[in-house]
Image (cartoon, rainbow, N blue to C red; front, top):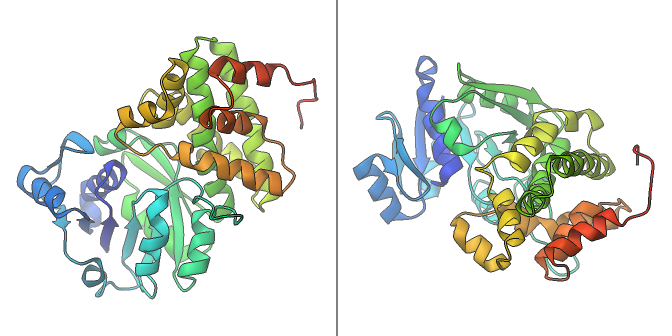
Length: 338
């Protein structure tokens, strides 16, 4: 199988390294890098110093900066194209892949920013608009790029309506250190991946304010309830949120020190501005850009998401960190099932 990973960020690089590690499968793996200077640096040093420093790129990994249209022109139906861009770049890249015969899957988690009164969309909704002919899906789940790159045990979920796409993802990445589970609930997997980023900002705020482990557990649990409500309203299966892309990814992103979104929440708790928090990261924190759309979609469906709403109010400057906590704790009593 030929595997083309589009995007030389941390996650794209880590997955490309992981695919090369699966030597018995014999895949031909290419990592496409948009920036020619970055690509040349990676070729020369065999290291992605900008996004994944300290991880040696295997000799079998081919680095390419050639025109993307040329690179994908000769892919076959049994090949696999991975889109490893931030959410903001997904629409443009899927448009370029229109007519591609290979299986296609994206890695980004979130909602596209809405335009005017139009709500922001998830990956599968964007794909249905700009490239409905693609056999496409999403690879998601609890995963930090650095741990995948060094071969630490990880489990992911390959979601697609097409069995051939699920099979391609399993074949490409399943190995002794990376388990890949198949799932046909694309909506549930994408909602889990999007909402957990927003909730991780809230838990980062909680930890930054030193509110304790009880508060963190409450946020994660009630956040999972919000995620599930939104997902079911959008057509997902409730049980998906008890799996890797729901509970699994939420726990990792809400508690892991490598979590970008959690670090944004912690920085805000320390009194830093949102821009300072983002600048310190040097990477995209998707929860910052998805939070407003999550709340917008929930509101349009009549779904109550008080934690996500407080995150939006915090990001927009309507609430200070301790005011956000007070707003959540000051809500009236309710039963646990709602």
